[in-house]
Length: 375
Image (cartoon, rainbow, N blue to C red; front, side, top):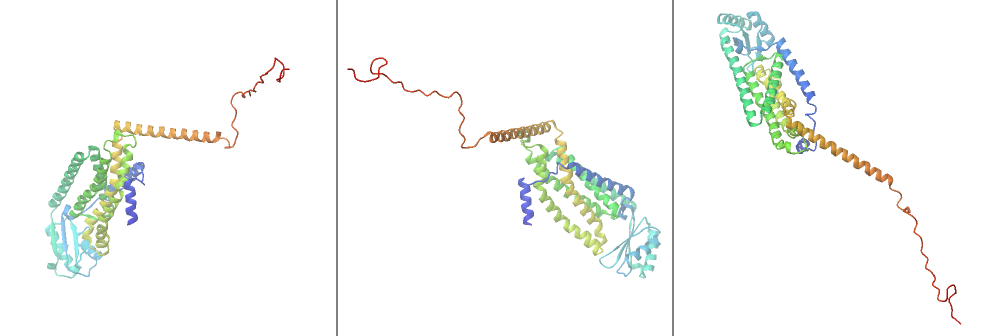
């Protein structure tokens, strides 16, 4: 944990970083591939809608020794089409059969009591009308649309419209992937699934807003300097909040993973699968989209502005000039070291050699006589 803390501190200070923005085309490609897979799954397999959305009957039995597989066989034989059977914590079974009316429900209840060898009065039957299920579905879509609109308005006011658009794209990305996984896995879609979807949208926005807030602080008066352009500052924001996003996501995923894999898988509490799967997939997709989709998309939108284009041009020109000056300085230093001779070498004489002046002899006698006394 201390190593992770040190890593987070170094990322926050900018001592180390990973170029998320520079590799954004890779992330876009991965996201497009996953999204296409999810859409194909939705188109081919469709969603396994629960009786809350399409109507039907739910039969709850007391504790029994009949297995889930046997119960499915009994229910499908009595109803004439597919049935969903889940093991309850009490030892009983929960049998869901879609598209039943009251008369058909009573007939199936009697048949199940005979197959299970129990009294029909001990089997509880609840009917859900198709109109009520349709109303639930419509309310869910209305709630999702209102949520999206409010999110865009808030982000446009708190930050700017480009960040609002990027966050909206990330949310659509998360919803598409989550619903696609539901279609591929075949889990039943219930009101709990809708609750899980709305919950993971909040978590997804949390991670996105954390990065956007850091980006907003670091890009104040960005055009007044010539050291960094927008994509580089955006990359610093991602690296500065990376460990925080990972920590919050892991802490949120651990209990959800317990519900999904231990509660729904190991213990057989199938009623937990609908909400736990949407939470698990949505939390993971939300953490991914906030780092690899939302922020790179903001960088692309911002750098399309004329002033950001001019800033990037100035920064790159300044760096190119600095690199050229450094190269010239290194060349001059190398040339100077090559021209220097040995330290004890005799300096070269520049110009003609100086003529040595000899002192003239002044005679004390007559002209041409040697000096001496006169006689």
